[in-house]
Length: 151
Image (cartoon, rainbow, N blue to C red; front, side):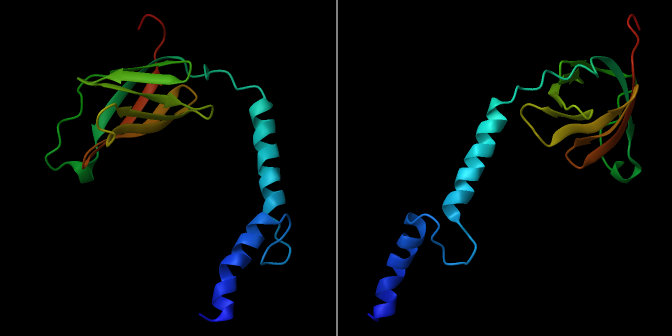
């Protein structure tokens, strides 16, 4: 075996084991790792954000079959479907229970627990909700409004 081939594993070992040693000038593997650990520690020490409550309430959603998906798709529900939102969690029932989350920007992702390809993805914009419902190859536009208490 040539002398260079025998030394190659040793070069890799030295590069990883010696602080500040790298095959590329200006790259310091060890210090980069320490910086990452410091950033992770400070992020862990900062207080966690509270639950998202801005969008709490009941939302009446109306579904419309998208024309390109009109093949052999089940018809859209004829009545409003209620999506309940509480502390960053969203849930609705359309024969199956769909649940998911709402982030601070109002973006929603709700899916079937067993089949993740059945999902609603959308966003709250003021008192309105706009999104899409996917069920396999079928696609539906979703639009809704926040319901007033007692509606």
